[in-house]
Amino acid sequence: MTMKLNCDLGESFGAWTMGLDDEVMPHIDQANIACGFHAGDALVMQKTLALAKQYKVSIGAHPSYPDLVGFGRRSINCTSEEIIALIHYQVAALDGMANVQGISLDYVKPHGALYNDMMRKPEVFDAILTAISQYPKKLALMLQATADIDDYKAQAKKVGITIYSEAFADRCYDDEGRLLARSQQGAVLNKEAMLNQVKQLSTQGSITTISGKVLKLSVDSLCVHGDNIAGVQAMREIKDLLSK
Image (cartoon, rainbow, N blue to C red):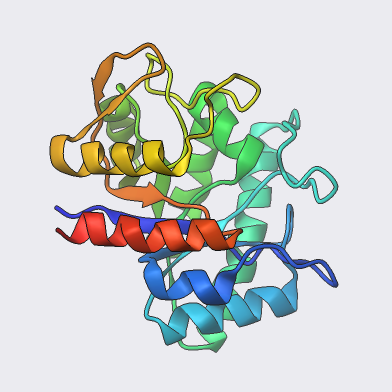
């Protein structure tokens, strides 16, 4: 199965513009749209949804901790009840706005620190599963493809949730199949290394970790970043690689 491409979009806010959404949308399959807690506002959400509709791109809610100042990259010690409520609040907002335009959400992909906590803290993952299972529309959950992805899928299956596993085109991995912290040297790949990683994932279903270990990963979708012209140009090359 050909991997899909996903990208985080709709992250402008008020007078602040982030990302090249107009240039990115024609090249992707799945748009992870900010819901206002880390970025995005009502008008940006509306315009991003319209753009996704124009290019027939699958829509995903991209909820986060309530952290506009920190762009959702700071972990907040929320209770399970708080996580469930903040997921419902953000997903419902985007879903409602999508319904106005005659389109519908397909999945949820948490953002930033909430995403990282989901992958490292069982109680956060459980709360997110509960939130999605309680939502009155069937939605998938996108999370990181790791060596233990089958464990995540088994837990999600118990509550009727489909998992979309994703890899990252421009990030280096550690030997556990998790992203190398941005603070570490080599965490972000240059263009050549990124394209080599995409090719390896596409043809061999594996990545090479920071120590040189080859690790098999089951990947449904590939996350690409389009907040600069070089990234958009690389996105086109990635699309070509995946279509071969």
